[in-house]
Image (cartoon, rainbow, N blue to C red; front, side, top):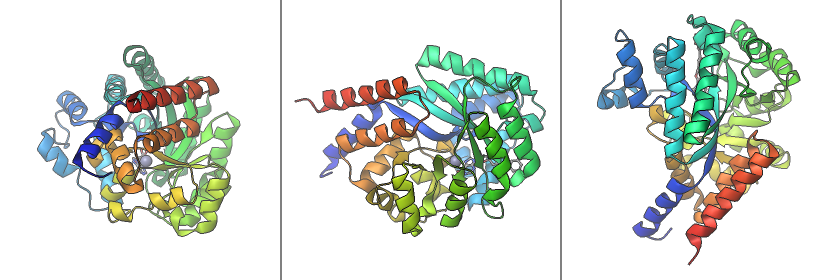
Length: 349
Ligand SMILES: O=C(O)c1cccc(C(=O)CC[C@H]2O[C@@H](n3cnc4c(=O)[nH]cnc43)[C@H](O)[C@@H]2O)c1
Ligand SMILES: [Zn+2]
């Protein structure tokens, strides 16, 4: 990129680029607009609604502080109608960014534990999913994640909700593991991932976000990960990078998130370039966008800067997400073609 005019063009290109998002959390996607709507329903909440105060509230000292704040927003989602509103409005925000397909990570344990009826919860997300597809043209799929720090009881509850025919929602495609990694070894979750995989779900744990590459190996070997959430510390292990590249195991890279939670010091120190240099399939994601003061378009702009990409490079990055997604083959072909058509129309003289 040579001057400001080029940077402006690239932002406009990104804004219209059809995209898939593979790593974005349900509650973590609540924009100030959605937080205000939820807080109006539950005025006893400690989450501020004024956008300036909210920006302050969403400034984190470390990963543990981030989780503490995250859970205070979880506390705002108390009824099936809250769940529906959150899901539907998150899809509206995605559509504004030309997101065509998203795998949204949901932590059902956090909601059922707080007293939301499990069937009503599933009905609310499914109702929102169908409305989002019909009204916004956004196809949503679910990843149910275990909040690892909550232990094996949470793992049991999550795998039950993900596999029991009576409750399992139609849009569920994958099984994950989130929350802090320090002091939460991945191998203990193997039996739960085995059950989820046996039920046809794909394995997508967070790993190597706040711990070293050995956690990514554990996710691969014990949890049979098909993609890795973050995987930031993989850069420290050349053998691991080679393994990820060889097996087309994508990393769900979320650059701004890594800075906001202080997993990485500065964007310029982010290892994304090392991933692409090693041939790893890199996808770009926003994680918890309003909490990190970002959105998916901004993450693509950050990636363009860090990887020195032009329009074709950005289109290739968008197609990486399609390749690594759990869309059916026809859906993948359609979205990849839409990306190609958009790029070639944009670049036509
Ligand atoms: O809900 C509870 O009762 C509960 C009890 C103990 C621990 C937890 C959690 O640790 C919840 C973690 C929560 O954080 C979500 N999340 C959002 N962004 C990220 C991320 O970048 N890395 C890891 N986790 C993340 C995760 O999906 C869980 O819902 C909850
Ligand atoms: Zn995440």
